[in-house]
Amino acid sequence: MKHSPGFERLCAEALGHVREIGAEAAAHLAAEAGHVLVDVREESEWRAGHAACAVHLGKGVIERDIEARFPDSAVHLMLYCGGGYRSALAAESIARMGYGNVDSVAGGWRAWVAAGLPIEKEP
Image (cartoon, rainbow, N blue to C red; front, side):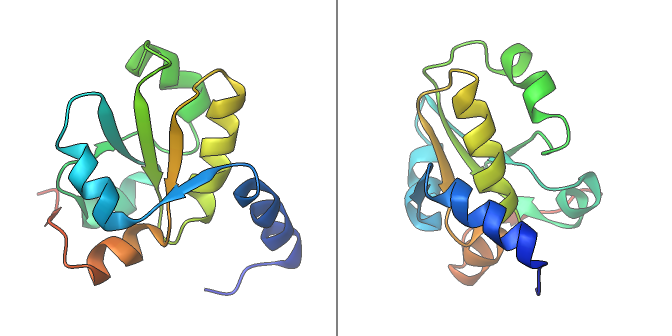
């Protein structure tokens, strides 16, 4: 997908401040306690298909809802979106809120699907 230059710059800056994790590593960790895979895409994207082990907390509300959903700021949160940009922006934002163990899944949903990792669709 082609993005505007300003958005590309913003995302590049965010990626300079957050850690990235590969889709396969995220899938492996998501099965363990203390690690949560979070889909930050829009509701329509989530319904169309998402990682089988993910929870949904859209980028539009993550800062508002993160503390209620995950009160332990030490939890390992692995965020993904379609390609890795929105998740990097969200990861940077919640890290600023005090969440110290946050990763953005490199390549996002597209990398998850390409790796053949388990997916689900909403009815």
